[in-house]
Image 1: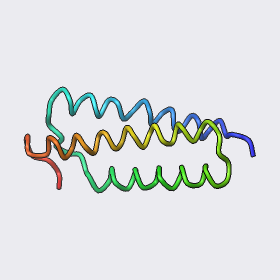
Image 2: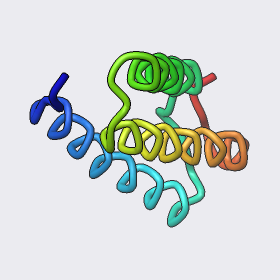
Image 3: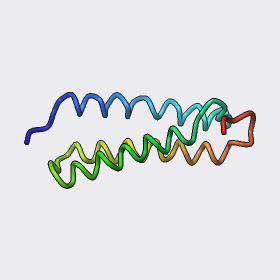
Length: 90
């Protein structure tokens, strides 16, 4: 099975988006409007994507899935770190 350029582009776009969210949380220490349940659902989706890649078509794109999951996990940790600094969505 060949790697889909669209899968790679999707993961690259996501990998460019999450650092902006992480940077904002680190800079302002405010996480108002972020949803931990949403981020957990995204992480779970990445877990399923990684499992699929490992079982069916392991290639370098698997690492993009893992990198994205790491970024969202970092943002989720920042949510819990700064959730009391302002009005965070619960």
